[in-house]
Amino acid sequence: MAAFWAEPDFDAHECVQLVHDRVSGLTAIIAIHSTHLGPAAGGTRFWHYADPAGAMRDALRLSRGMSYKNAMAGLPMGGGKAVILADKAHTKTPEMLAAFGDAVDAFGGRYVTAEDVGITEADMVAVSQRTAHVSGLPAQGEGSAGGDPGPFTAIGIYHGIKAAVHYKLGKDSLAGVHVAVQGTGSVGGGVARLLAQDGAKLTFADIHAERAAGLASELGANVVASEAIMSVTCDVFSPNALGAILDEEGIARLDCAIVAGGANNQLARPEHGALLAGRGILYAPDYVINAGGIISVATEYLARRQGVAADINEVRKRLAQIPGRLEVIWQESDATGISSDVVADRMAQDLIGRG
Ligand code: NAD
Image (tube, rainbow, N blue to C red; front, side, top):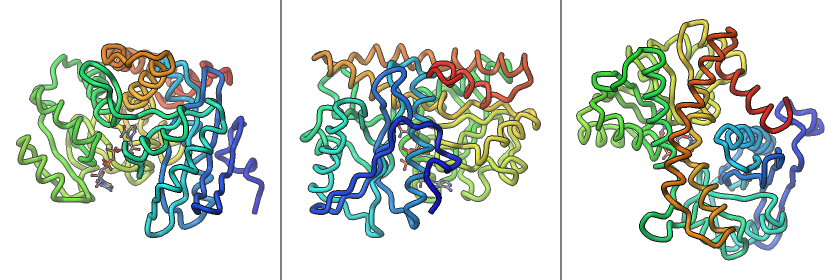
């Protein structure tokens, strides 16, 4: 096996730790990309990888993404990520979560964890029995931030879509603007509800067809098969399911003016940002538009460290800054001819001292 620092996804990460606990059977990777701006924050993914190298790639790539996301969200946090390697049956036990909590605690606050794919709020409550360096815990009453980051991610994306529609289409209202939403889960469903309130025309697809159909009947939207959503003629394509959907084939199918959604790592490879731009499609860099969840999680964590309840208004204030950041990126992209994803990467690299 080649050394992992020869991996294309290794980006001078500060620390990559393999954790194995023989008693509970926990195997995990905790990757800290950068602590330049503060403790490395990023969720824990619980996933079955056919090949452990895939887990390492995910940990390296996702932790770097968190450095960029946190920096561009204006948070005093660095970037990190944990990956727990699940077995095929996705067995998750209290003992594994306890061992994972101990592993996080051993970083002494250099890494702060929260929910990601496969990890619930209840799991984070279990982890919090072993370490204080955890967030995404249930909100402590009215007016305080906390809990599932999904709804906050959705609010940020909604703001971002409105900004994109204004920037690209010159419209101040979403009334009649057609948005095709790929994935109607926590984030996509939340985005769709907010768009519906503004009178947007909506088309949904989800591999769980009944999920898309249920939401469509609630909101008066259309449904298409999941293979068809990327070719729907629309104003905005909003990917809220999988990453790496924007490859040659996917981009060629798009019939929209804007791509703006919450899925992480939407571009299959870096060159696909330029391909999108070449087709005249405005792209909202994923880690800028989908920062709402980490904004909530980080605000909650920082408040708890100071012994106060996290103020929901602080979260709202930070969410409201997402459109402005996107506009700066798009203006710079238009002025220089450099695609928006590269503009965002360069801004993030400057912020984390790697410009
Ligand atoms: P989720 O599991 O609640 O929803 C994802 C939905 O996508 C599910 O309904 C699933 O059936 C559907 N789906 C999967 N593959 C599909 C396909 N090929 N076509 C159509 N639908 C498909 O997850 P979520 O929390 O809503 O996250 C969605 C995306 O947003 C993920 O990429 C996630 O990494 C990213 N994200 C989430 C958050 C958050 O706060 N939850 C924050 C940042 C980024």
